[in-house]
Amino acid sequence: MDRIKKNFGFGCMRLPMKNGEVDTAEMNKMVDAFLDAGFNYFDTAHGYLQGKSEQALKTCLTSRYPRERYILTNKLTADYFKTEADIRPFFESQLEACGVDYFDIYLMHAQGLVNYSHFKQCRAYETAFALKAEGKVRHVGISFHDRAEVLEQILNDYPEIEVVQIQFNYVDYDDPAVQSRACYEVCRKHNKPIIVMEPVKGGNLVNLPEDARAVLDELHGRSAASYALRFAAGFDGIMMVLSGMSDLAQMQDNISFMRDFKPLNETELAAVKKVQEIFKSKHLIPCTSCRYCTAGCPKQISIPDLFAIMNTKQLYHDWNADYYYEEVHTAPGRRASDCIKCGKCEKSCPQHLPIRRLLEDVAREFEHE
Image (tube, rainbow, N blue to C red; front, top):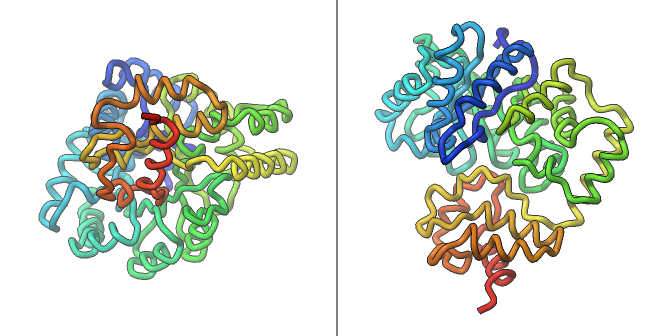
């Protein structure tokens, strides 16, 4: 990991899109700007954009730049292996999709109590360590979504783990469900370098409520994203902060304050504290739009979009939210009330949201038959 140049990484879960495909012309510009600014860390997973993220990296990065110019992280996701024998073929398919001979970092993806049992039963960690010994992986780590006590268990079971990726932002810092602070402290206790995901909470800390935005605007400084990323990057032990960027303007904004990184000062930290309190008062659904919940939904309900509409209605009391519910994000058989309560969504939700109950709330708000 000594080849990592700076503490800001290109998260490739939310890429520029055009007509349902990755806009490779725009992504080429983003990759070029990122590398030209001295950054070199890219993060992907096979499930990101239904495999299109890996393919876009091959088109826009690995086929255009020599291997030594970039660090590439990929992940082993539970959905893609049922037995130990499935792991190596899947891994090889990832190498091929990305156009590389090895991954710099390979993460056991979305680890939590349920997923961890599956990974242990299939000897996934042992396979990853073997791949490292063979030179096909440089470093093995985990991405984690669960309580701090589960993280403690994993790091005790597998002290060979070299890096931990956690959700960490100023809204989730003391959140009892996400436990960002507690998970951070476990990583520090075990002396594991930390990669931050969701520093802007799926865009929620960029598209702020008006009263929260006003607090940051009073600083007469930079963008809302800048305070979120710099908050996360300012903690000891943070090796990397990822940002999922969907256009060149977002990339350029992030580069402007991460190229010569400076932690938040006392005035900025006080403003962030005020924004934390505002978010707590809104009682918004803390969905990050990762869309893990939609993949297995038998009714194909667009859960993150419905939650976003619910939050919009809560914030702005806007009739447009009703329009978007009826005309854009639902269809016959795919409304909130069509949920059959199977629970698949909740098992895959990194935020541990009570999705079935929340969909009932959405139905009460928007469906008035």
